[in-house]
Image (tube, rainbow over all chains, first blue to last red):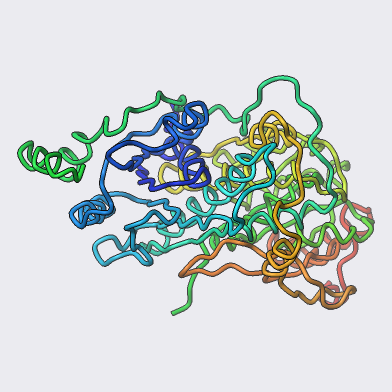
Length: 229
Length: 257
């Protein structure tokens, strides 16, 4: 049996928008372990658009963390030193311009959302975001390959407006995808890890804070009491 | 310190004429791979649409409909880490694996050879490049090869959803124009002079990626590939040119024949 493409890769996701979330969905599809960091109340999309939330987040683990809180930010930095990649789209409370000394090998993928105030393309606003997320997926993998050569992580920034402008320039032919009648997948390649279920907010708190960071039950209980996790 | 692009140790053969295959190979070229684009001899210079998706590549002309051409292509694939095929490439993944068992094989299942680059081609090519990168990452770890496949229409449908209509980038026209300007990079193209192409949009902090090479003229690098890379003797190379298996070898290199 072949091993999954991204076995051994763990990515932390801090997303507000769909592009970064879709990037991490692709990482999970290809076999990475993805830890989605949600605010203690859970991602707003869970209630705003459950179907979209499911499409973007199947197969990920979920932890809750209050990033407004200094203790929460400190915990995030601890987690970042245990993982290979961090994908973010400008979440408040995160200052992660460059990898720190203890996470020299960390790849930081930063999606910069569109400067557009709103998307007039009501027909498929998520489609646009998915194209940006796909570009972020490629960039993350490229940087991870770079780490195998140099032992150095780096930050890669994907600016949504630039990304879409480039797509529009390349596709100057302007043809549209013909109608496809059956449900389709992005890849024909059978991926070895089937899309998993949807995690509850914080479902993997014990696993990540306990097993990965080695916090005791008492420490975890205290963080819960303080509302950090 | 000199930086090394993530794929600077990788060679990729692009042996398919579809735009999706070309987009995939260009993205890998952006990341530092040595991409060899294989085209039939006597290919006319492609349309300007292709300038955006064919840069950062070397050009080889080879008639793969001839047995000698097919064999040469397989020899080249044996020297590459990854190969990008499409539905019209007369080489199967099994043949590639028989040549090199750990090849990363990417295939865009389309058969169209067109200057008309559509959004679906860009999406499929970007997805295919992601699959190649995932497979190359696994190869570094386990030495395994892989077959990664996408279909352009399916990929676009999967991303753009039910509607699938592609609007030009939404937003005020001025913003759209300034965004487009921000991605254009000038590149000096032999024959066309200075042209503006949409450059790579990834901003890597340590290994910035750029347009390093303009789109090659068909067969521009025949000499490099045949003589230096495959190590053909001068008589053998000349025979292949005479038999129409490969296109001409350009003069500065031909002097070595």
